[in-house]
Structure formats: structure tokens, C-alpha cells
Length: 203
Image (cartoon, rainbow, N blue to C red; front, side, top):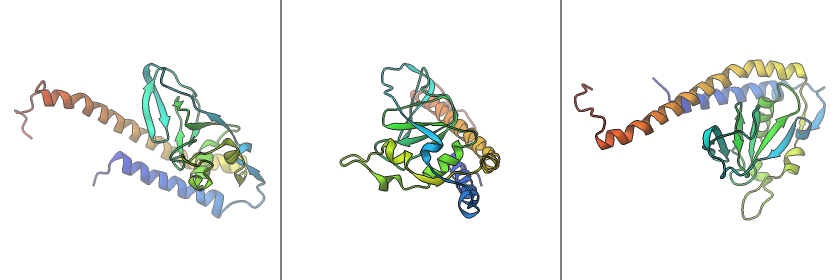
């Protein structure tokens, strides 16, 4: 049975989340010090993208990729957290990108921490921490104040080495899915207009 890239990625993400829980919840070292999310990251505001020309860098909103633009806002590993809208739609990104003004992006304060931060934030019900009234909203103060045990550098490295192959596979699946979509979008109008004739194909 052949599964779609989306289903494969959901399965890989579930496996990575299970490894996170094993490392940092079930087998957490009681000697790890308590701290706050602000000890690990800087939360940054995204920016308006409307004046940017089209390009190759993805623009992320709370629903995912919105378009591709000429230059990135940030080029390093990051965790994207909705500032308004669907607050629980947290994303991990490891390529140059642009983040819209309703989406926070994050700078890591130490190595091998981005994937840990992603799984930690994703495991939280951010929607229940809503600071808005009409529109669900998140604030830097709420995110910075989230409490957690700060894992050792050794534990973070071990976790990184365990889940990095899964993330690489997810990235390949996403790239394949995007290329297939682009190919479909390019061929479909030509098929509909008769520019490409498939009547003689033996299917």
C-alpha cells in the first residue's frame, strides 16, 4: 500500500513526538533545573509581506505557506507560533523563510534546542492561553513565561540525533509533494485546453 507524503509525515511527526515524551517527560532527569521558555529562545515578530516581489522563499502564516517571496526574514532553524488566529498551529522550519505579522518566529539561544522547543510548545494548549477577545491572540509575555525543566546539553544532543533523520525525511516528502503539485498545476490547463493531447495514450 502506498501512502501520501502527508500521511507519511504525520506518522513521522507522531514518532518524533513520542521520542520527545520519552526523553523529556517519562525519563526526565529530576536534576534538570526549572526555567522559562525565554531561557531558550527569543520570540520575534513577523512582518508584512505584501510589498515583496515573488521569489523562492516561503511565507508562513498560521495556516501554512501562503506564497513565495524574493528574500527571507530569517535564515536559521526556527519555531513559528501563531500570534493571532489558530493559536495551536505551531510549526518547525529549517530553511530561510518569511513570517507574516500575525505569526511569531523564534531565535534559538543555544544549539540543538529548536526541535525540543517545537515539541514542547506543540504539546501545550496555546488556545487555552488566549489573550484576545474577538480574535484569539498570543503574546510574547505568555510564551516567555512558560515553565519547563531545562534539559542538559547531552540530552538535547541525543534527542537531536534521534529525531533529525525523521525531520530530513519529512522535508523530502514535503519537497516531493510540492513538486507534484507544481507539475499538476502546470499540466492541467494544457490538458483542459487541448494543448496536450493524451487521446492516443494506452492507459
